[in-house]
Amino acid sequence: MASPMASQARVVIRDLPLLRANLLRRRNPGIQLTPRRWLNLQEYQSKKLMADHGVTVQKFFVADTANDAIEAAKRLQATEIVLKAQILAGGRGKGVFSSGLKGGVHLTKDPKEVGQLAKQMIGYNLTTKQTPKGGVRVKKVMVAEALNISRETYFAILMDRACNGPVLVGSPQGGVDIEEVAAKTPELIFKEEIDIFEGVKDTQAVRLAENLGFKGPLQQQAADQIKKLYNLFLQIDATQVEVNPFGETPEGQVVCFDAKINFDDNAEFRQKSIFAMDDKSENEPIENEAAHYDLKYIGLDGNIACFVNGAGLAMATCDIISLNGGKPANFLDLGGGVKEAQVYQAFKLLTADPKVEAILVNIFGGIVNCAIIANGITKACQELELKVPLVVRLEGTNVHEAQRILNESGLPITSASDLEDAAKKAVACVSKK
Image 1 (cartoon, rainbow, N blue to C red):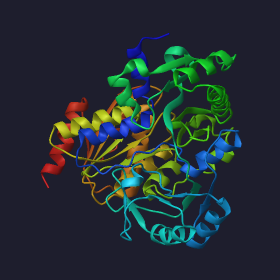
Image 2 (tube, rainbow, N blue to C red):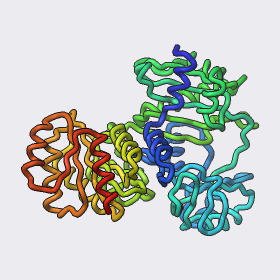
Image 3 (cartoon, helix red, strand yellow):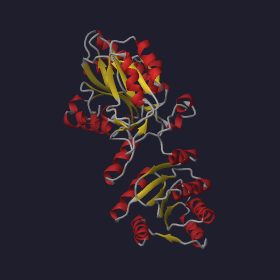
Image 4 (spheres, rainbow, N blue to C red):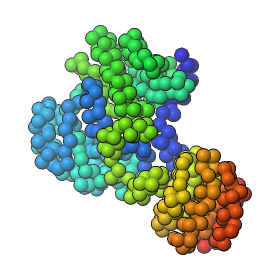
């Protein structure tokens, strides 16, 4: 069993894409950036996956018109109904619609009011602390049975490298930021390491349910839900299933009230039906275009485009540009097994951004062959008739051949010896304008 400090660290750093987004926002306060996973599912999609695997969730329907929402409310036959706007950003409850309606989550006991609320939600933009300034258009609402919660706990299943497998993490303090609980009261974070071959043992599930504060018949019910959630975790190739709150009702029922699921993108070939649900409608068109070529694009608000391989190198490049007085316009991540055609498409995407006044290429070749990058760069510069300054820093595999290709191209490419040199030269290019 690891120390409480180790438990805390693994709870806090549980979502790398979100962490990456938050780091970028912190280092560049003016950036409007929507955190996103590589696979994005709406709340109702995640809850359907849970229900299909025997996990207890609220009864719900999905509607894309006000009339459908009214019919859904009638079918629920619930004492109280909760209406939730379906967008991928958090903070919906405190958001504001372009229709003037405040709040993306509403409770009502009147099915007719469901229709009135839905009319002010569907087709309008909802702006929250996690959306771009103009908000995100709401196309669907979830109409669900509203249940009272008598007690809230936290539960998650995470992949933990230190344990060489999955770990169950829980706390009796749910419904709040688990990071805050871990920081202030680490003794309230409990974990169970799972043998991937044996799965969750009954004793482990019951022990965690007990540590979460479930008593009497609720304890076994919670343990059963924990095992079903673990089965879901395995069956859908998840890297994380987080339920907050994992609560109990006054009627004596254990319910998963909200969930976030992260998936192993490498398992897409096994999970085609799940990946087909990926809601890309909220992405910027350029992000979807980049994904079509197996590239990852994140738009920022500066004027220097960053062309890199790897998220860590992307953050370092953005940081060093900022430290030298510049502002990154975006970063485009090539990833690993890059091909020459991808480099060409990457340049097309970068130069399509009217804000871009210079391009900084920063490649550290490990599994990436620098010569392939160089050939792609020269082809792109020639065929696209590149109009903005280009600074290139290459290091690693086949770098000498890459430098020869660039030097003999006859193109106005500025070479850089290291990242600091590259950043200074890129900032100098835009400063002259």
